[in-house]
Length: 115
Length: 114
Image (cartoon, rainbow over all chains, first blue to last red; front, top):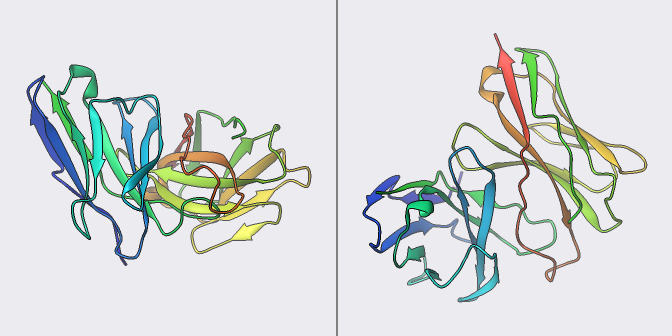
């Protein structure tokens, strides 16, 4: 069964450093998402992406964040200058369609630890 | 999207049915009820969704009341692997222009006991 994959599974970085989290969505999916979950808190939407542009973003997704689909398979989330409060699990998801009845399929997540 | 209310936790014996309730009294006519679950820090997993009719798939059944103000997710024969946080999410469905985000609440921590 196709699945969303994410790398790395765990990333440790120093405050102020840039990190890139990588995701490979399911191959025939067209819509891509990033969510995050701070330890012990709710899963929060960050951004959705379609046709090489952001289609929706939350208030969390500020100028420190960017997303890109650099090739036909990868979808990345970049945090330019990490802060302690960016420590969280980051989940990538994909769906065949955007709205409607679409199911979002989630990856296993990347645990980001900012020191 | 309409607000949902779920109990914070529930227990269920292995092999028995787990019935997880969700209140969504402000649901509107174009909103579907979705259920996802999250097994300990893994990515959320889609379970089922419905509008007004009861739905069943290989994972679960979804019972929606006639007034659509509440629903129940049923896991017919719960196993230890069903221990997870279960999220009830109400989303507008109006074609491709509807919102894309999933808004997760606190969910219900279901613990299946041996």
